[in-house]
Amino acid sequence: MTDKKIIIASVLITALILGGGVFFLSKSETSANIATSQNAEASVDQKNFDWGQINMKAGNVSKTFTIKNSGTEILKLYKIRTSCHCTKARVKIGSTTSPFFGMNTVSSWTGEIPPGQEAELEVIFDPAYHGPQGVGPINRLVSIETNDKSNSRIEFSLTGTVFKQ
Image 1 (cartoon, helix red, strand yellow):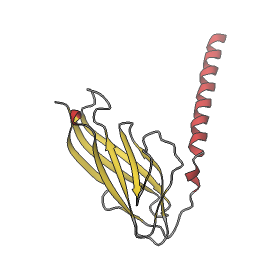
Image 2 (tube, helix red, strand yellow):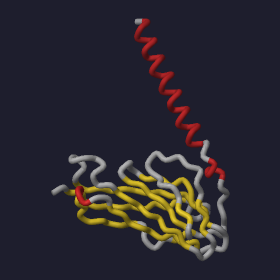
Image 3 (cartoon, one colour):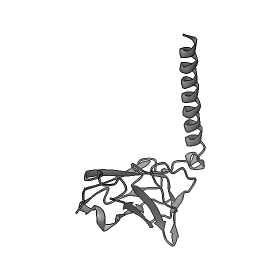
Image 4 (cartoon, helix red, strand yellow):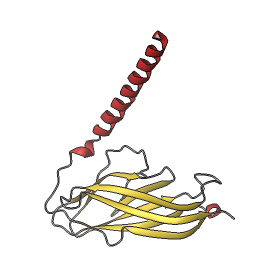
């Protein structure tokens, strides 16, 4: 009976250590301290896109969304994440391009869109990432946090159907 208690205790301690590590890593992002703004205004004309039929063997597909700052203060974009490892995203503001972001990317990168200006969010999906069994309908999400008090999180949804020839 003592061996079972030791095993259970070891499993619980391991789970606590892993959970604590995830918690502290998620809190260590410097972008988490960005103050909201009454005068930064994120506006997006399109949040959904359907690629339709995606040939697994034809290579990556991409879609670019536009995010505009319709406000009078700088709009900040941060904590950009995708819903799957097969999808990555990056932001271009003027001549500055962010690194690629993915599902588990932890980055202190923050993009700043001046009033009246726009940013481009490029989303790239790799239909071959999941291998031959990765066929059928897909739904991928990209989320971005902003300092816009009334629109603090923007979520983009991309769909399609992967097939192989």
